[in-house]
Image (cartoon, rainbow, N blue to C red; front, top):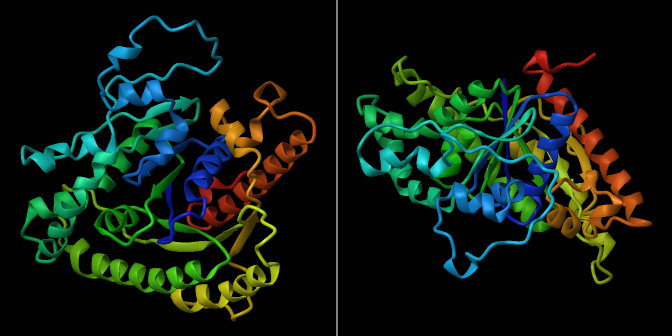
Amino acid sequence: MITMALFNNKGGVGKTTLAYHLAHMLQRMGHRVLAVDLDPQANLTAQFLDEDELTRLWAEPEDTASSAPKPVEFDVRPARVFPGTGTMATAIAPIMEGIGDIELPDPVMIEDGLWLLPGDVELSVFEDRLSAAWPNSFLGKDIAALRTTTALHRVIDNGARSVGAEIVLIDVGPNLGAINRASLLSADTVLMPLAADLFSLRGLRNLGPTLREWRSTWQGTVLPKVPERIPAPRGLMMPIGYIVMQPPARADRPAKAHDRWLDRIPEVFATSVLTSGNPGPHDRSFEIATLRHYANLIPLAHDARKPMFELRAGDGALGGTQTAVRRCYSDFRDLAVKVRERLAFIDPTLRRS
């Protein structure tokens, strides 16, 4: 099993959409995949589950105004099964309430070979508790702090083992806060979606040193003090590369400005993110792919509740739109193969003949 976080401390680069489609494509390539939503905005969970399912999952009371019988709808999707299922917020609730350790939710089965550990907006309350636990973990005598700091990792590890996942994809929010620190410590690798703009470049300059500091502090100061009875992450956070997410086409966006920032990404990635064996400033070996925006497919996929590359005529993908669907499938298939190749350097069991 290998874990990969999709992370950029700049928002609005299509990170969650990328995580959703990459999870589906890797599953279709024969891998057992667990998607984990650790962004308190819970957008990944909302992509996987419909509103009725979210209502059940988050235990929201039914709207009495809509309690009248609903018209019969035909849906070929498998029904989600929720026994024993909670969210990342309910998992840490005992710690927040001071009554015990984590609860271990069962992942939601999306389809055969693909599962979800759902997110929840209430996860945001864990931020302050994690911030307080971090310095208290340094001495190793505060077991409660160590349990708090490792809580998200232990929920992920248990969920992945319970379904036999080969690849775990972790979606996190666009910030450098305590929840993301705990989330990224659980990641063996980090994949960075970027936009070719000034904000992504500045984000990379902050991101690289922060990851190195977290890794050094965890591996050198905290991890040696964690008792064996508490499963703890290795804190590898190995950058495997970046993906350039193209913006929607706009007539008022100069192509030269896009190209100017695109040309600077390799140097910034090499000097700010990588720690050893840095490539030259013009080496694009860590640029895994450039993905189109597919703006015309996104609303159709949202309504059909399926990946863009699986849209059919019955979903509204008519005429020339089917050409975009086929191109989208090819793009994500190529991307998934390249990501798997990089992950296989760490976990050779992922290699396929």
